[in-house]
Picture 1: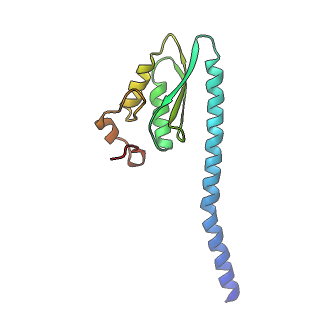
Picture 2: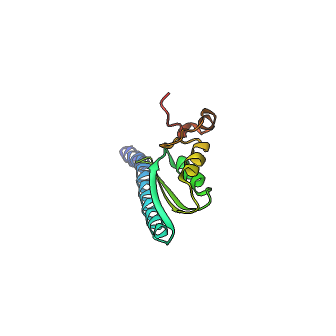
Picture 3: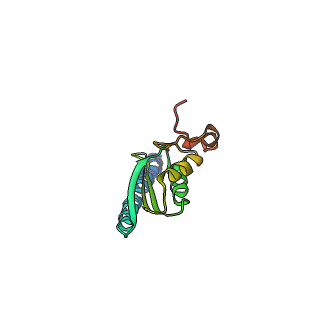
Length: 137
């Protein structure tokens, strides 16, 4: 009986620790992705005729990251986009002669995310999944 209780305790402990290890690995993978993305942005912005800029975009999670980056790269001339969830900051590498940054702000707002210059409409914001809601209401 004592052996059974010890075995159950060990199994329970292992099961409780597994999510923590998985979450730590997920965070480590996310940090590696951010580093790689910053490297790509720097390389792209160093090309002739390209520039790099950053501005605030509100969001919460990895779903927001995908949506924000996708909206930004849909603007013709935006080469790379990387959104940092901790800083609520989008960094872009774009072709200076092709891109009007207000077009990027408008595209992101249309996807439901507020930027420093353009707020998303209430309709676009309400269409976001619940985990992506960032406004305090």
